[in-house]
Length: 133
Image (cartoon, helix red, strand yellow):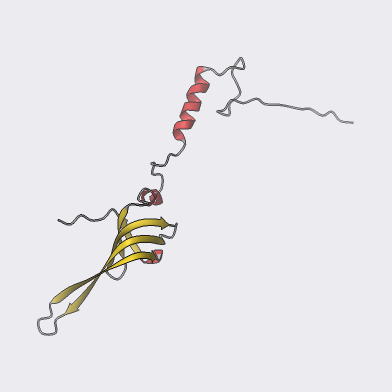
C-alpha cells in the first residue's frame, strides 16, 4: 500500500498563511481593513447601470427615440433599460413644414400617465430631471 499524506494549510482571513504565532499581527489587520474597504457599498458607482440604481424612487428624465421625452419616478429597471415609471409626464414633439413659407413648426403635446412600462430599446438617455426656469 502507498502512503497517504495529509497536508493542512491554515490561513488568515486575508488568505495568507499566519506569520509566527497563531495571533493576528498588524499586517494582517491592515490587510483585513483593506478588504473591507474594497467591498462595494450601496452608494458606489462601478458600472453605468449603478448610476440608474442610485436614481431608484427618484424623479428622472428619459429621452426616447422619435422625439419623446418622459419625466417620472423610477420604480424599477433592468439591464436592457426596461423601466417602470410612475407619475409620468410624456412630451411628444412633432415638426411640421409650413407649405407656404417652408418654415418648421414645432408642436409639443403633453399627457400625464399614472404608471408606465418603458421598453428599453427606445431609450436614448437617462438623467436627473431637467430644471426649467
